[in-house]
Amino acid sequence: MSTHLIAGLGNPGPKYVGNRHNVGFMVVDELARRWGAPGFRDKFKGEFTKVAVGGDDVVLLKPMTFMNLSGESVQAAMRFFKVPLGQIVCVHDELDLDFGVVRIKVGGGTAGHNGLRSMLEHCGGADFVRCRMGIGRPQRGRPEQHVLSDFNSLERAELVGVLDLGADMVETAIREGARQAMNRHHSRS
Image (spheres, rainbow, N blue to C red):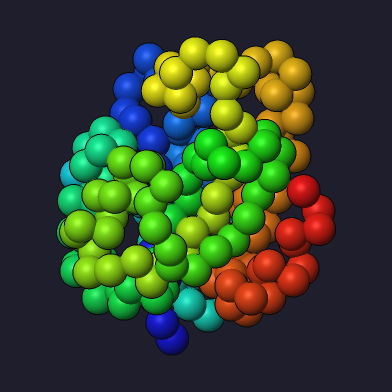
């Protein structure tokens, strides 16, 4: 039996709940609902819960440090539960993918994403699984304003399906591996 850590990135507080930047929190909440996880508790500078999935322990974590310091929370949980880097799945928003496109990737750079930068700084490298939730680039305005804005009405109408797809990809990645998640789900988005 091994332990996986799924970290959904976002910002704490009611002001940010519907923001594109908080799509990582949304997927973690969907996984907790799907797996019947006990309620989230405060620890590791975040909120976490733990559940058994297919014989493995899975820790679901929402860092409450604000996006730019997410790695502090992930590192604390990683150390406590003795989770190796390769068994971490980070769910985050991705400007370089259109809304509705979800991709699994192992390793890589940060593409300017401050949450990923913090994870690389604190967690010992880049070789963790990423579930990249597409939010698209803004037509006009700055990316910083776009990520901190709420999904629009058209996106909200499709959001449940997109979050389901993200949750499906994460579940496949932890049960069968990242490559299988790519093969099975990339064509769906």
